[in-house]
Length: 288
Image 1: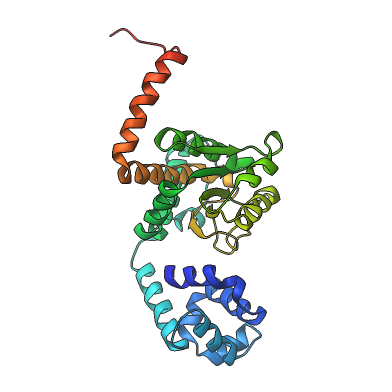
Image 2 (image 1 turned 120 degrees about the horizontal axis):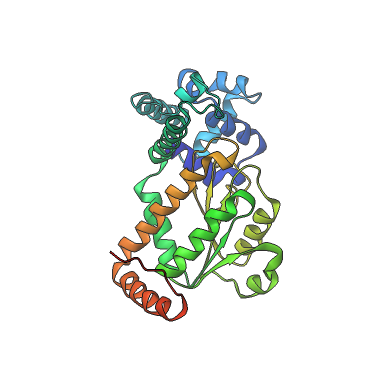
């Protein structure tokens, strides 16, 4: 469903209210969309067959049949690979049980990372990497459970790229930042349930100033999904604290992508960083 999802995400705000109902149905019930004609999809969504066809055209398809064929192909591809996550719903275990806890938690992390991997395309990663490298200034935003990965990302980007700022909310000066923001800025947003309003507000103002928004979230129709120029979906369990491993894994891939794409500059920065670190930070040593 990647292509259909991408089109809905990018064009969602331009759709009519009736078309939005159908678009949300496509994301939630793709099996029914694959099996039923446009008229019946219209009835299931409380709209009409005409609305379904108009949505197909609005998403760039020649008609409903073309969109339906793509949904079918996506479902077929999905059914042919193992659903790594399903067993954690089929065979729930109590996490406070000592026996099997290590295996259960680590296998759960692996399952969600695998599911995220299946939805992350190389093109999406390449676009994100290119946006970071080209940006004059990068601002990273993430609160509550997203603060830890946001802090790590800003710290690491400052090493490999530089000119990266972690927005810390009330301890920061949003007005000053937005006064300087322009189309050469990139704002990286981490937003997961429960979605923090301050994160969304900051991204909206940055976008109005011309900044590009790169978002990491659990759903293309999340509050940040409607604002983002590019959204990378991270499949996580709830609450988000149980999905922190997956978030860090995706961010680690992003850093690896930046390092690979701009290797010469990154290596030069690493060398300078190590030299400066020796002047400011006393590191412990071990005798071998």
